[in-house]
Amino acid sequence: MDNEMTLTFLAISENEGLARIAVTGFIAQLDPTIDELSEFKTVVSEAVSNAIIHGYEEDGRGVITVRAQRVDDVVTVSVMDKGVGIEDVSQAMEPLFTTKSEMERSGMGFTIMDSFSDQLTVMSKWREGTTVTFSKKFYSVRTAVM
Amino acid sequence: MQFQMEMVSRDTVVVRLYGELDHHAVEQIRSKISAAIFQGAVSTVIWNLGGLSFMDSSGVGLVLGRMRELEAVAGRTILLNPSPTMRKVFQFSGLGPWMLDATEEEAIERVRGIVNG
Image 1 (cartoon, rainbow over the protein chains, first blue to last red):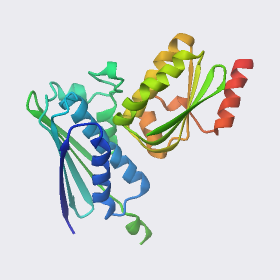
Image 2: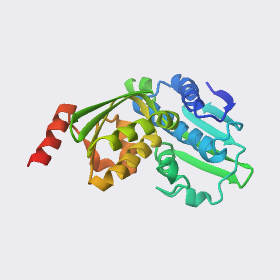
Image 3: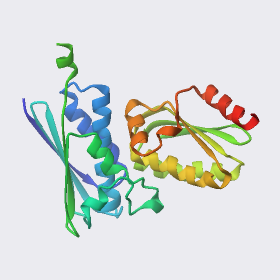
C-alpha cells in the first residue's frame, strides 16, 4: 500500500523535533528496525537543520515543506526551503566543509545524509532555495522474521 | 533536553546528556557546558551519551567545540555509551578514537591512571 504526507512548518529550531516525529510516524507502518529508524531520523534532522541554519539563516520567517512518499517498502523524503540556496553544491557536500564553523557546525551533515540513505539528491538555486531528496528501502522486521 | 554535569575530580567533569541532542538542544546547553569548563581547571570531559534517545551532527559540533576549548590545556575527551547510529556519526566525523567501551567509573579510573602513572 502506498502513502504520502506533506508537512509545512516555520523554519525555527523548535520544529526540528517535529519533523523527525512526523517522518518517524510515517515510516512506522513499515516496521523498521531500531537502527533503520534512528538513521533515517538523523537524515531528516540534518536536512531540516540545514534549511533552518543555512537556507534561512535562522530568520524565523521562512517556511520548510517536508514531503514523504512511500511506494512499497521504499520511502522518499524531500525537504524544501525557499531560502538563500547553495552556491556550490559539490563543495557543500564535501566532508567537514562548513560555512558556519563559528556556530560549531561540523560540516558532516551531507556526509551523514549520504551514508544513511540509499539515494541523495540536492537541487539548489542561489537565492531561490534548496530541495534535498533522499530515499531508503526498509527491510521490515516482519519480513526478516518470515 | 536535560543534562547534568559532575566534577568527579579537580580536573575531570562528567557531562550526562538526556533526551534528543539536535541543533535546537545544543543551542540551549552549549554556553552552560562551556562556562563550566572555563570556570574550573577542567582538562578532561567525559561525555556520557547513554541517556540520549537521538543525536545528529550538532552533537559532533558540541563535542568538537569543547575539544577546541580544551586544546590550550592539552585536554582529553572521552565518549561513552553512544548508540549504534551515534557510533557511526562519530566515526564519519573522525571522533571514533575518542569513543570508549566502558562504564563511567571505568573511564574515570582510566583518566586517574593516566594522570598518576
